[in-house]
Image (cartoon, rainbow over the protein chains, first blue to last red):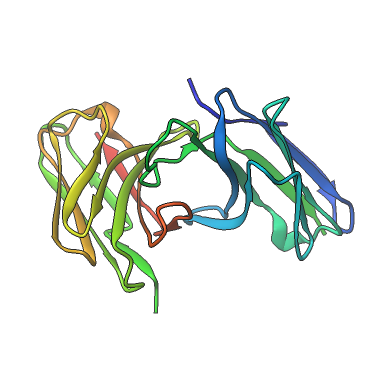
Length: 115
Length: 111
């Protein structure tokens, strides 16, 4: 089964509104990342939050991490049509040693922003 | 100036054929990966090479064989293709083995 699970599976909003996506995971982690995937393209890294951080900002992105609940949220403020994409969380289990970049991805949230 | 480039972008072939996907990165990263994205958009790691040495080999049929001639290239060869191999295959690279830089994918369709 997937380590990360995003919720909702699909989100449709109007330009200017905020979009919130959630991710839950099962095992202890070192860090959690969010990636964006535009249709027909590869994934692009957005932001990383470490297990000892609770909140992180980058431009219009705000990520929170609650390790007690094993969950994270990605908030995109003042959304634009260009934000239309799939958003994935990715985790690396904290199993000791080097992860070698073996990320575990969820199924993603499909965000549609209507102009 | 694509950082991670894969060829071909689309690959349509028949069952039983052998095919290869090529990947090159110009970021100077030491580590490269192959991930597979299925029709439900789940991404799963297949292989990883660090400076031409295999470091991750997930439970992948041995019909799949990666080859890294140098640290900037990681190719994927698939023998005896099956219908279930249809997916999008992504190459990625990383310097810190934490954040990954992905190519735009190769959509493989086996008929």
